[in-house]
Length: 112
Length: 316
Image (cartoon, rainbow over all chains, first blue to last red; front, top):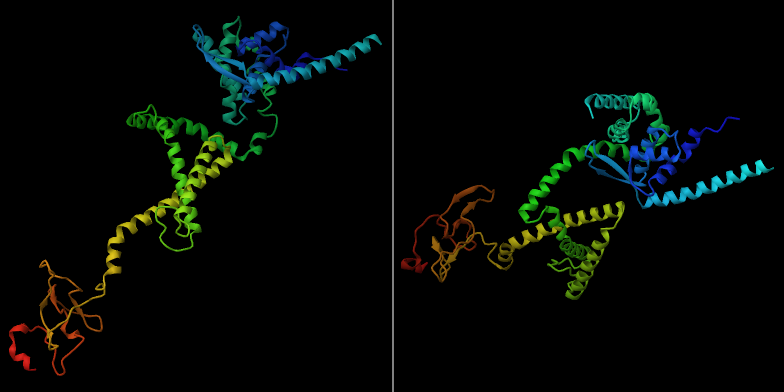
């Protein structure tokens, strides 16, 4: 079989990861990328995060506002709105279910 | 940030854009809207060129495509889903760019004239007034449609000439219109469009009715004269003395000494040819058309006989 590829796994959960990264604090694009990498998702690509933010915004899950910055260009901050929080909760539940199923499955195989 | 870095970012964004060249322009613009700012952040944090850190622009574009499945991937799904989407995509930005700023200027200028920050603030205040007017117009249209008497309906929505019905209908229509007005602010697209169309038709019908009412009010003076005046059909006047002789060149005056004008001072023969034009106010205009004639007496076309001073005529 093919070895598990983290990049492939990420594709399915990147939306959820980005929503989760915005749960406690608003952030601009590069900021969110850093949060994901700090959290351990080192493989996540810059374009993926940028594209995901645009898409989630288009889907109505995020709102944006612009904050002037002293040294650089204005920064567009993304923030979870009510629909985004709902989605985070719903997808989070699905993920937990999926993850625990996988955990159970792997534990059975290991202990068997 | 130095200009070299800026140039590098611009070149990178340009290359990404080129790699996404197959997308519709609006979608591509939308996708790349924030990329320059985003890459500026990337540049500011750390060392190395963009290509070192992010890979080639083509790879970046491919990754963008992969994480934004709504672009590419499927053969134009948004377009087949909504035939208006493309049109909207084309026209809305143009409207936004060229028409909206103009409207905003008009809004503010007109508003200043009316004493409000913007003209629309004033018109919003007029909304309930429009609801009342709309109720009245609707009641009038209903009354005109249901009223079978064929008489002029007046300014109240009378059905069968009844004032009570008129007032009830008017009250119901105005209340209904206000109720609808309060609800219409929350209506969705189609019901709202239907309401606007209905209002438009109502206004057109009302304008027609108004023009009719206006012209009939202005004409009523003349029509009253025509209806009540038994002399409206008079074309000529023939004055006879007590012996039954036609008096030529008679003049008529009222109690105030004002000359009385009747008929028209033009004579036509039986073929419709103009015979002569007489002096207005001197009767008869056309002596040859006198209804009664003395046997044997030929009509005198232009004699200047003064009946009271011709005693010789008495014997005839």
